[in-house]
Image 1 (cartoon, rainbow, N blue to C red):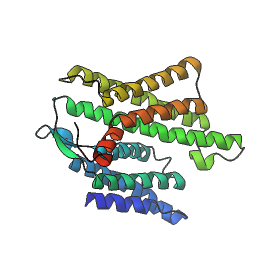
Image 2: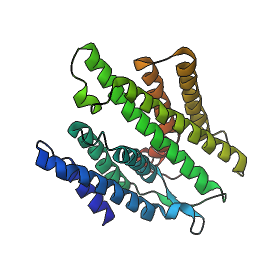
Image 3: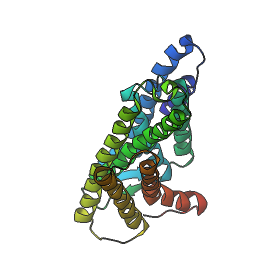
Image 4: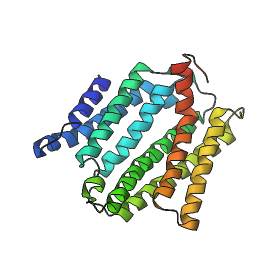
Length: 257
C-alpha cells in the first residue's frame, strides 16, 4: 500500500503547466517522499535491529539512496518549485520504488552489532553525494546558460550561481565526512577485513572526493573541472555496492554477501 501511495503521489507531482497543478504537485511530492521513506522502513526491516537481520540488496539500497536524496531536496523546498526539476526528481523516485518492488533483496544476518550503524552511514553518504550531484548538474546547466547569455532563473530557482556552488560543495563536504566515518567504522568493527570489490571501490571513491576537496580548497577548482571530479567520485561510490549488487542479482541472478 505504501509503494502504491508513493508511486501515485510521484505521478501526481509530475503534473504541471499551470499554477493550479503546481499547487497540487508540490505537496504531492512531499507525500510521495514520506510514503517512500515509510515503505523503506517497513521493507528493510527496521535496519537490522530486529534479530540482527536486514533486507539488503540492489533494489533496497538504490531506493533508499534515491529517497534520501529526494528528502534533502524536499526539505530544501526551492528546487521542487521548479516544474522541470520537480518532474525529473519525481520520475526518479517513482522508478526507484518500482525497481525495489522488482528486486526486493533478501534478509541477511548482520555480522556485527555495529553493522547497522555502518550501513546507515554508508547509505547516508550516498544520499548526500546524490544531492551534491543534482546540485552539480544544476550548476553546470546554469554555467552553460550564463555563457549563452540566457536567463538563469528557470534553472536555479532564482538563486545566484555562487550560492548554488556553495551548496553543492557543502553537500560534498558533509558526504565526505559521513563516508569517512562509515569506512573507519567498517575497518575497526569488521570481524574479518577483506579487500573485495566493495572495499576497493569505496576507498577509491573516498580518494576521489578527498582530491576534489583538496583541489577546491588548495587550488580553487571550480565549475565543470570540479563537477567532473564530483561525478566520477559519485559513480565509483555507487558502483561500490549498488553496482556490484546489480551485476550479481540482476545480470548473474545470484546472491552474495
